[in-house]
Amino acid sequence: MNAVTHASSPALPAPIGLLAELTHRCPLRCPYCSNPLELDRRSAELDTATWQRVLAEAASLGVLHVHLSGGEPTARQDIVEITRACAELGLYSNLITSGVAGALDKLDALSEAGLDHVQLSVQAVEAANAERIGGLKNAQPQKFAFAERVTALGLPLTLNAVIHRGNIAEVPALIDLAVRLGAKRLEVAHTQYYGWAYVNRAALMPAKADVDRSIRTVEEARERLKGQLVIDLVVPDYYAKYPKACAGGWGRRLMNVTPTGKVLPCHAAETIPGLEFWHVQDHSLAQIWADSPAFRAYRGTDWMQEPCRSCDRREKDWGGCRCQALALAGDAAATDPACSLSPLHGKVQALAIAESALETAPDYQYRTIGGAPRTAVPEGAPV
Ligand code: SF4
Ligand code: FES
Image (cartoon, rainbow, N blue to C red; front, side, top):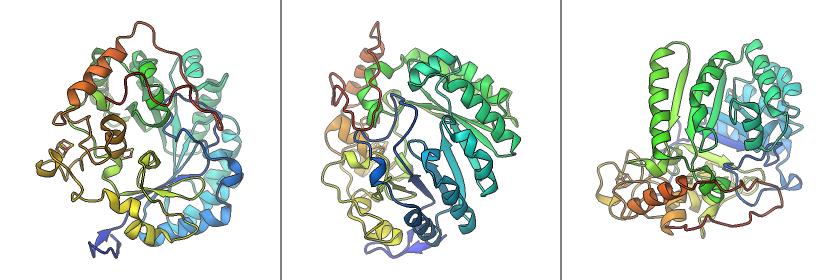
């Protein structure tokens, strides 16, 4: 693995993945979108040549995987050129797409340009439900046609389903759908509450009993479909015992480049006040990885407070998620309240139970570019 120079660690490992958020534009408006509440406008997006340079820098730095994401990455006119740049640089490219609007029209050219993998989002199996969640009519047949073409082209297909109160009953049907569409992998990803998902938390929070049932369903299907379908499961933080190592640990594995060229340690890092982010226009990716104040802020374990500081899991989960710690504890350096050892954990679980018990879920607040949500945070938060 490549290594880069770092003031306090001479052999800082190189990042493995680059999340290239090519645009925030998207035909869908999913209420759990992890994009920031303030979406970047098209006029401020990086141009093709800058993305090509950034990708070349990523390859030199040792990055292996590039996730072409958004918003909807195929909304970019130059998505084929950007994909070709990945292939020419030896970077494994993964297109993270909604598969609607013009995505199908570009798919053959993307395959010819060397695209390695497609990750298609599905909002639900039942069309009316899927289209209500995504906020776009007629999306479902477009997605199915897109999936069919992906497999016809011989590209590996992963389906990604974000799970919440509005679709958790459909987990068994989502597994059947993945098999029917010829997917090699299915991500059953319980909602992570940042960005728009945080705003819509009370509308999205599932009941614990339903979460437990969905986990049992996945475990049973993994056995039944061994060798046919791999199922990844992201369990919901608010009901967890220990948090996940968010982004693989801050500044350890991933770089996230926003549509305007800001480089973040995770997709929600801009919610943390006071962090200084460097920009691809001003610094190389190698400089940013090694020395950007934002990347150094929570790298390693020196910044940790108790109980993380003396916990034997501190180099497994790296204290959980900094953005969630800020959102729920009001301090980005606190132990993630998803952890059962956090003093706030009981309150977080009680809040999840109270929200999931609401007889009628609140209406979704759909994301819009230039639009602001009606409320910045859900009722009762932060805990
Ligand atoms: Fe992880 Fe910190 Fe919880 Fe220990 S106390 S399990 S390091 S979040
Ligand atoms: Fe930022 Fe988890 S989303 S650290």
